[in-house]
View 1 (spheres, rainbow, N blue to C red):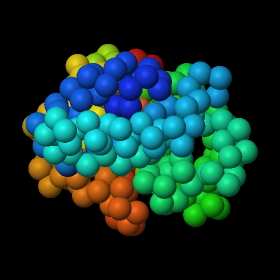
View 2: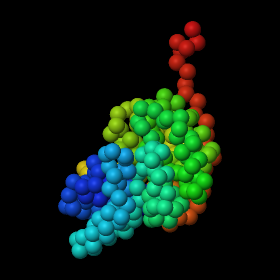
View 3: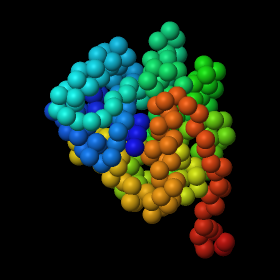
Length: 255
Ligand SMILES: [Fe+2]
């Protein structure tokens, strides 16, 4: 399995706070069946601004420590970029925000309260650079909870959609859990990742049974293995045709 969204690098954001914690996160992931893990520290102007160069140094250190500790897992670099226009000022270095510095896929997150109108323009600006945006944990955004169908607009434009393991398990409450299930059942999500911040976060492999109950085993393997593996290897990701979600009408709406 391939986990494309984690905060395993120590002391760079609100994720791991020590090397020991990072190793514990790696160990738990490997035990759950993850063989490739992507370190995606936040890039959030004013809060989390570790440079991509420093991220690469820390990833090298962590690889060496993991090898020493006998943890068999491949560490790839990435970034979780906040939707902020400043990102384009990194023009020359822009490709280093993408998975494995390949310039193919970029993980981005929106403000939780709403998906701002400028996001559509930003998606376009990313795509003209030949990069496919992957929108992180969409099930947590208030706009999507209100109307899960708004995600189809981004899928039609060519974005990939990622959901968190914690959301499937109800870690962020029943509304987020319900939304995650709707998105999965209607093929409005392409990848599941852990977004782990500590060694107490559920690693990707632990969600296999729950996910299989929702979408079946074949689709589960696409969500946690085939599609995320294509992302880290820079290959195209085949995606299913989404189904329209029709919410059940409440009886009082007829009166
Ligand atoms: Fe994250």
